[in-house]
Length: 88
Image (cartoon, rainbow, N blue to C red; front, top):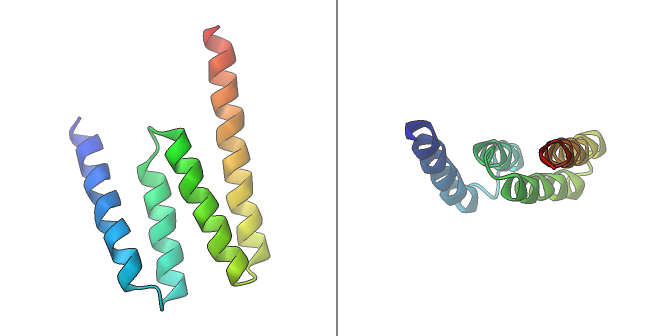
């Protein structure tokens, strides 16, 4: 419970920081990545933030990094589907 509380606090802090550092593309990307990692217990939110990461990389023509973000999304979906099938 304490770990979850710490992660959520960090997510909220990083979310607030994004609007103040929009001029710094690298810091924005780092914050988005950190936020996505903070949602490890919520695959839907983690995927949403990874999609945001993909969009940021695409805006900057960082094609390899954008592809990596999509691979992470695919990996999460495969992992979720595997665990769902294992439960049924």
